[in-house]
Image (cartoon, rainbow, N blue to C red):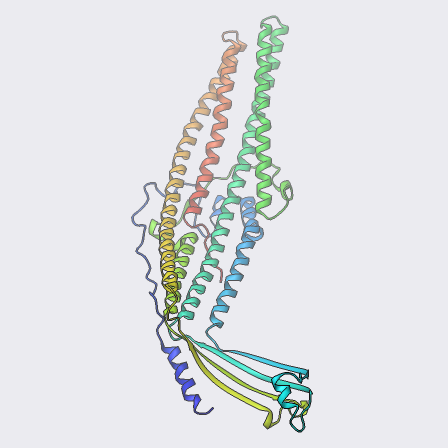
Length: 475
């Protein structure tokens, strides 16, 4: 056994110093350069950085909802569970490089067949005992020597997959934060649109009272009363769809916060003004997305893992070398199990080499290279989609702001025109039709103004999300 120790030591040193077969990972060239066509959001009541962009809206309720969703959302919980799985897989891949040591023992009560070869021979020998007890105990060690790095490449792939799972957790959290903010803004938008509709209904009720009074005085035709009533009903009919939309967004918020619909509804029942989106206090260029966007980083980790598995597949071309050892004891007498004569020792070395397998290893290597090429294309596509998200959200933000400004001026003009139309109607120099047209135009423009403000705020959220959001990698 002592002569085998130098061999064992030499093989171990060779395993530790050997290079791993297969290509080493080379980071692809940056897929994104230059700047954006649309400017980054610089306007707003405040400036914010991307770490906690939702706080820049200056709305404590929005901040509370976003942070609650990030902490309680069940999609985030699933992603966190996947991180625990990937860490376990990484631990297993690392353990595969180390020796294993197993303890084993057995006790048997046996009866030897007299018609078996052993029984036939033994039964003619003096002292033969057909009944016997057998006791065994020992320790077995085994170690696959990773001479060509297949196991190290597997560990490299597992490490990348673990990193990818952790980044994917950040991606899911970033997405949930943005979704919660989006749902909150839409809920506030529905509340604002409901306020517009109810205010317009009050205006139409006042107009109907005016028409009925004039009808009683004999200065209005009966049809004007029907027209005014119809206009009021049309406004009232526009309210239920808005209330349904508000209910849907409140339900969506509860689910995003990991709760049954209706749980947090009371917190948002009181109307509140739509928060104004902040500007950015930092500059984020397209190339920055390669290290800021968690989905891009996760795609790169998948590429790293696919590259490492090429080496793991190539290692099958080479022999597998293993070492084994046994130190134990066996005795027919339990009292003598741990005495010197019962001891048994063995140290072994072996190898296995796939010399001819009809191209199976070739196919495995080709498949691994194909998966690496697929992961590379997916990485580049993810980077391009990231740039697309930013460009689109920036354009939406810019155009929605311009639209809101124009609609604001339109509402101001229509408000004045509507007041003048009613004054003219009361003075008998205008028809009810002019007042109704002014009401319809004002309601439409006011509703569109609220929608454009909501769209601009949502576009700001989409921009912050597209730029990487409040990305942070959990340890």
